[in-house]
Length: 181
Image 1 (cartoon, rainbow, N blue to C red):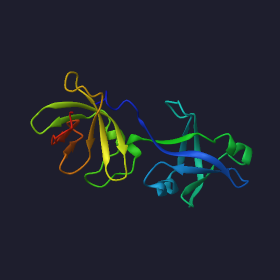
Image 2 (cartoon, rainbow, N blue to C red):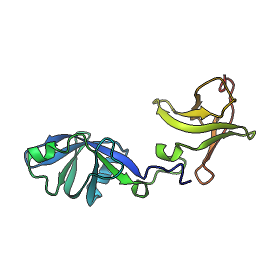
Image 3 (cartoon, rainbow, N blue to C red):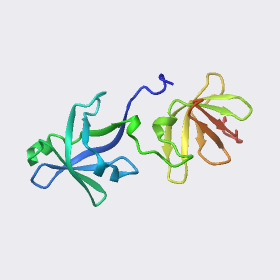
Image 4 (tube, helix red, strand yellow):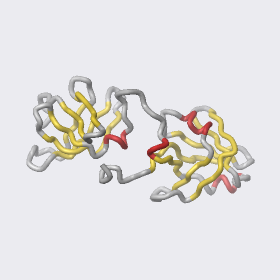
């Protein structure tokens, strides 16, 4: 499983602007649970290509405001200080994500899983998940020689995706007509 879990950080927000004149920053949440910021003790800030936090700041206070999260970080006390954080990403460790309800998974948990049909045919591994609004779609890199397609698009529907098994690192798929053509 270690080969699949190559990143240990999960994006939960991005600093998009300064807010007010006391050093607060406006964060656009990248989480279904923006209220999680209200209980955080510290904030890990990453540059666009950083693999580890560039800065770790104590959180003085946070509040939700018009779809955004406003954070006051220790040592960030002016508009100029806050502007230096614009464009930085806020991430948490994989072990700090908010648990999802039974049957739901984070995209990072799905990337790399093998898709296997109910008849035992390996289709390949999930390389991306498209969120279309109607239903998600798994983008699978097909096993060599399986199909002429460069990607297999699997709709995440109950009659197609039978089971997601994180322990076995597999997704059980009911093959539907046209999927491999």
